[in-house]
Length: 216
Length: 216
DNA sequence: GCACGAATGCGGGTCAACCCCTATGGGCCG
DNA sequence: CGGCCCATAGGGGTTGACCCGCATTCGTGC
Image 1 (tube, protein in one colour):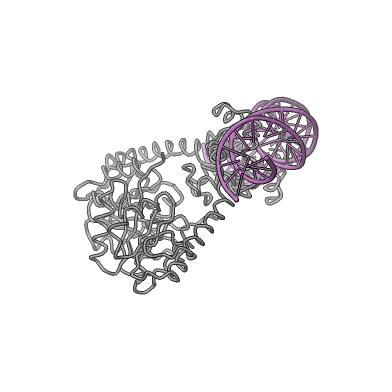
Image 2 (image 1 turned 45 degrees about the vertical axis):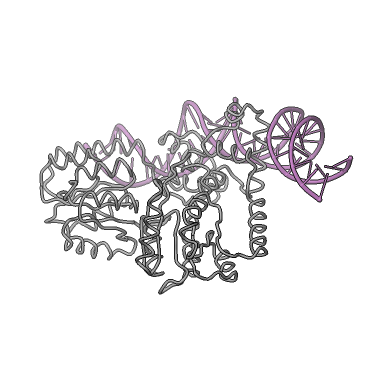
């Protein structure tokens, strides 16, 4: 496995809420709160500086609200996952957040119950929602996500083989390591490259580095 | 050119010194102070969190001195360059710092004069020293660096070709771009891989990423 | 139960990558 | 001037990467 450490930034104007979230987050050995902010503009600065894996932000932030902040974060750092805390259990809000690039949506009332699961989900680059989200919206989004995922995501086996290739192993070595035929390795390699629209081994290595599958 | 923004962390137990350094640093449009610390242990935490390009640290830090801190930083984040501030114009100190992995050495008395030049040098991954460094030590180090460089560094042509390979170009494409024969491209590629002791294209791409020849 | 995707495997082919060796012309340095 | 490195180029060969299609097995879901 690659390093599973998640670097997290919190943004909420209530110190007490940050404190609570931080203590919950810190209970996980691989999660680190590496920055905090009390308003939206500051949050953007902090995110810019520390480049976290995940930003947990309040929807109602001073200076720049959660929606604008989400857009700004995803624009500059698309690989930072955004989890939004909100009091509004409204699906128009959720829909806006989703299209802005947020991948997590957590009602404050249910935060303590779902926070760990939500961060866990975002760690795996999966979406997470709480609240009375209407089935139709959820379906629509899940479908959208599934379409996108099937276009970009690899099966576990493909990912494993991509990792070994990117580490410099030859197909023959990979076949030996995984006790597979070279043909199988070639099939997975080809499937991964087709899905990701990569045309050379070099592209594949850069993909692996960008996506933290390997260390450069 | 790649993004020339340099993310910098400062560590000094004197708030006033950090303030001064920060204001000098910030006068450069592409340099950002993204973290500060008042002692060595805190500095290590901050560096771990923000992963800066450059750490500017005091030699005499509480909790963990500049030498230990340099070792710790280079161990975890070898790509972070370390610039050490010190009052001691002693070459045994400098020698220790150099072997620990620091690449910059600045006397506090001359700091304001040389700070920008030092950061500029480290940005380009070149060493920088101030003070009455003895000619012999400097010679020894320069020689060492030269030996290391000649062992690992590529000729301009080889570097150019390594870059193109790592960007995903085929030998044939490279030959067309540079108006060379494929054989020549192969020769340079083989020479580079022999020098660097790399055995696959994937190794070469990782080398290129680690050494900032390409963006991942 | 049938459809579908994931994982596994094979054959046969093309082309690129890599290996070893050789060679030449230009520039630089002692 | 005589090495020495660099950039250039080639011959000739082996191996690996990638393309096409096809098949089986297994589990999940409708």
